[in-house]
Image (cartoon, rainbow, N blue to C red; front, top):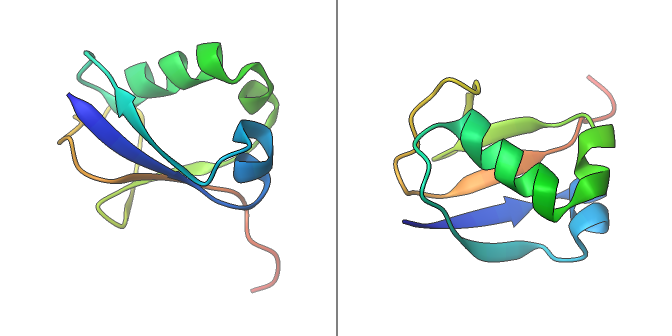
Length: 77
């Protein structure tokens, strides 16, 4: 499946892009993250949350093929 991934803040700085279409054959968010860590080695050193269809999700959530966003921690309250 092709997944559109959006990168924000510090994560976009690591990837050097804000969005990409990523071809992926896995099923879980954690599997996608493993693939992204291989592609972007410095991503392992960053703290971020994953959103699928604008909802925060954990690694054991099944990918739906829809939009994924990697969100860095936000300052403030």
